[in-house]
Length: 175
Image (cartoon, rainbow, N blue to C red; front, side, top):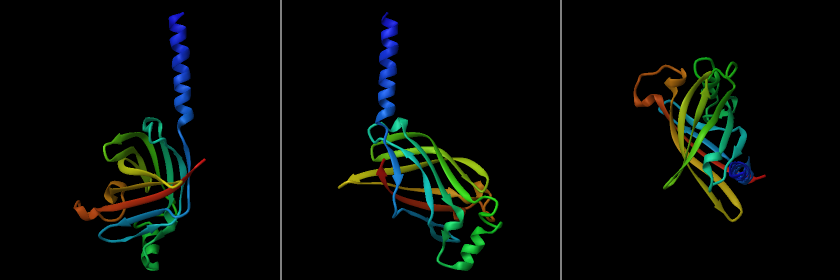
């Protein structure tokens, strides 16, 4: 009897935990900025599914995608080069995708671990981020580095110049 009661209480607690996870819709005004030795600019198309509760990050899930063809370096010739088979090969690999495996709370925010898929290659990536809620608005912000050589993009030197800093700022609305 005690075992059945414990099983029932555990099931209820688990169900409650799932119910409190908020689902978020990506709002307009997001920024995906990159800065590297050879190029800097933005990606202008982001989509995805986000489930996140700041009080319960262990059950969070992020599945977001960036349209490679939305790259904007501010120079059309550079955009064309970046989309070509010499770099991103947007015709064959049109999407950069990140899928989380876990989220942890830190003293200064959170960190989401997951797999980044770019140029047909998947690698583990950790992204530290802040989640801010103020006056009815919610925002995810994070900065991390990606070594393009890990994803077979461009000619690499094995130096710091192979890394690109990525900054994301994503406003969201609760569903």
